Length: 199
Image (cartoon, rainbow, N blue to C red; front, top):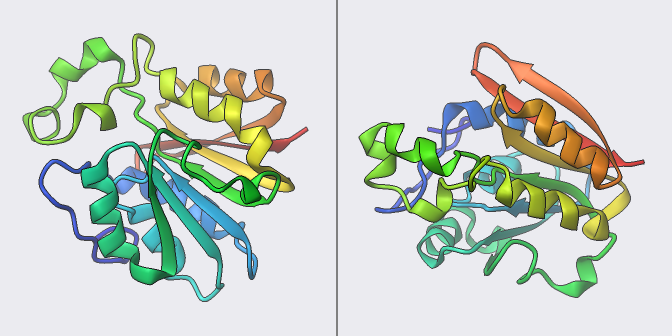
């Protein structure tokens, strides 16, 4: 179960963590009827599926570079979301430029050198591309944040899961990208999310 929803996770696909429920809770609070919502680095589609479970009808797009993940995401959202395979924003339709109200990204943020220290159920059974965030753990986040302003609506919000240790660096990337960040923390979930909109 994830955020109250039963989620199908196929072999090799990133297993949603309970800490990501903080990202979901913050995204749910931003939903308005008809909002364009993007679940970037969607993995199994758990975040998108949890947002679809709300009574507010939204226009949902999910994207991941891993075809095994997007096949799994399609099972979890069915016809209620558009699931696309490709690198970050690349597969999204250009018609979404400047229209995205909620952009949620659980991008990989584990530093490459720390992957060997992860529990075996993660490092041995989940795709490396879903875990490896590069030397500082922020490589994929950096690309998400740099690209976000082109897609966000004037009142849109980017939400990025990160670690407590990396939160200030992630917030710095938001500021460098022209976004105004807030760092949110849940000790109960051991979760950290940076959220921000256009300045």
